[in-house]
Length: 385
Picture 1 (tube, rainbow, N blue to C red):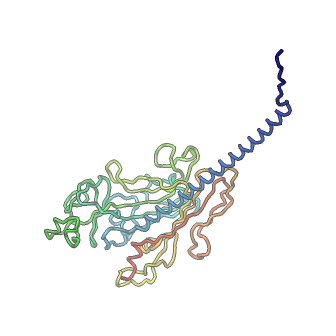
Picture 2 (picture 1 turned 30 degrees about the vertical axis):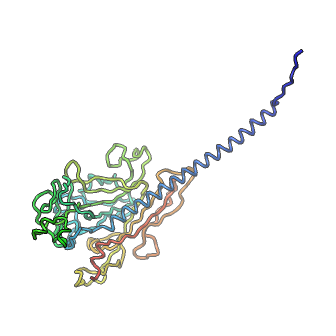
Picture 3 (picture 1 turned 135 degrees about the vertical axis):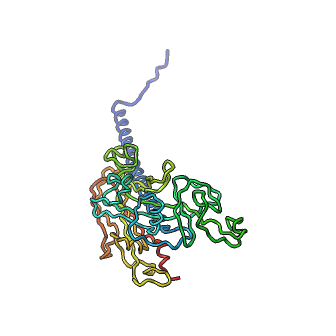
């Protein structure tokens, strides 16, 4: 006879209880995973906003500090009329270097700034976010072209000595006796002593003066665009279809550069999420008597601030304050931005903000980044030797 073993297992009730407990544990794990994913996503968005804000402020600050750097050239004079920021002729560019910082202001949050008509190709109203200002910076490159190196056709260069300067088109091979285009230089410089340490030892050893240093000329125009990537593939924002249907306001920079071998401008994105940019200028015009040592008024320190500078204010600007209102590129689910944000300082009552924005009552998190930047090359000219 075979031994019959009795088998036992879970009853139906026990099985249902086990399944229920398992589902509860699974629901808890899913909830924890979703909560953790949301927190990680929010942290990533916040990190991106902080990174973009700091990067945008750093880029502007570094550029503004170098405004007015023209190599050894120090005899430039302020223009009598506001230069055309988007002009590309060498004559206009040479005059414009006398105004290293320039700007165009938005009068209200609903208004756009009004740059010259020559900028309309790159800065039409559709490409300018309402309420944000435009900042123009002019300077030379901090590194001179090494004699023997070729310059780029369509780029513009500054050749200078302390008393004379010329804006020149590139497209030639430089030498110790040439200009930026490769022709014979008319602007010469002194040799470095000892002459063997000079970049042009042959000319210096023969007792002749080498060509003046050649540096690339920069014209940078900062503005806030309503989008990052226009839907039609151009550089001009088109509307609600940009950025895959969710336009991201973006800080961009219009730069003078070579386009197809000709001098033109081109737009380069700087940082996404910049919703507003407001610019104030620290003006040094006291004392008003011209200093016999510097030939200028003032003493190198700002006496007042203005958001609507005149041409004479631009010539006496010694600091620039930039305020950026940053927002996350994506909205946060369940978040409503009920805050107000203060940008700038009231020029009449410094304890008050210049502009209060918000509440936006949407799902985007925001933060204000601000920096006051000294115009080193401009303010230093006013200081007593």
